[in-house]
Length: 235
Ligand code: CDP
Image (tube, rainbow, N blue to C red; front, top):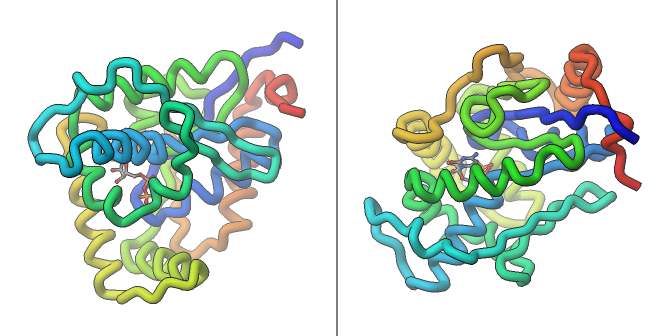
């Protein structure tokens, strides 16, 4: 074995499809996938459990000492996130988490904690990681950087379809407003804001289907001649 372990950084706004295409590209290539958004969700879950509610503007970074967050990517392409040994994968998808995550992900101390954790997972194996600031802040030297985008309208419709698949009824206008609000939060936060990283490939997925995006990502990884890919294979 030997060979360099590589990092593929995929950033983009809410509803751009980053997590589903990154997950599937990773599964096909035998790489590990890391969902950085789930880590912010897990921190939010932990802090809500401890404080009941969170105050915007207050820093909670001091309460993360000793907090253990782990994430596993299984061979079927599912992500399992745990907090101090408890599986929180479903709990972190709750609406309450979404409502409070801004307070947590705006906090520079918390961003440092999460970035340290994310960086600690590189080096041992090749990985695809998605988020908002992976190519700009967490891994500015990533072998491949991708910025996935789509119009706010297309992203809203994708979110609505996802909710419907889960059997939830949602209001299209409300989802569109949420997407617009999240875009604003993501691009305006002082630390770790969403931006296209230098040297990244920009993919507008507005008129592409999921399979086309997955193939394009796999192609970009292959074109980058990403070394050590096969070494990164798990099982
Ligand atoms: O639902 P969506 O895919 O947009 O969210 P997610 O990827 O689960 O991320 C949840 C939240 O964490 C987002 O609102 C982001 O603002 C924040 N986040 C972040 O600040 N930095 C990252 N690297 C990833 C997510």
